[in-house]
Length: 135
Image (cartoon, rainbow, N blue to C red):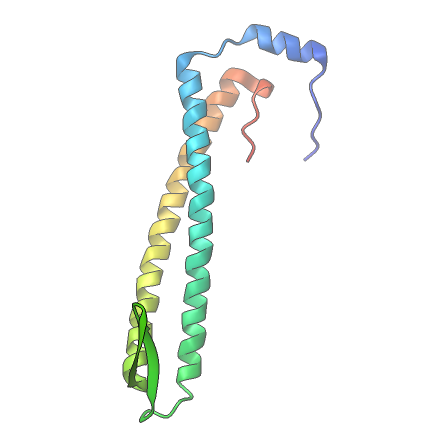
């Protein structure tokens, strides 16, 4: 996408034509707020996906361990030695919990992006090229 700057003439014409109303400012503020939330959610989503990947990798490694062997499992701030099958069950449960959290984050992220899209349409319709909402 090629970007170009407005000429002084275009800039002054656009600025004179549109006045920022209170409702416009509220939409701009809402867009900014949603954008900040979107960035945080994307970071949280990446962290959850990384955690899920790590748990799956650990589960794969634990399948190679003898079933009679005790495996250290972290609960809170301490480690507890548990049998390998029990640790695998706990890891499976943790992975399922993360899957649920990831789906909830994706839904929330999609709703933010949908609302941001609507705000973009309204603001670009009102201000045209004199406003920049590209993230």
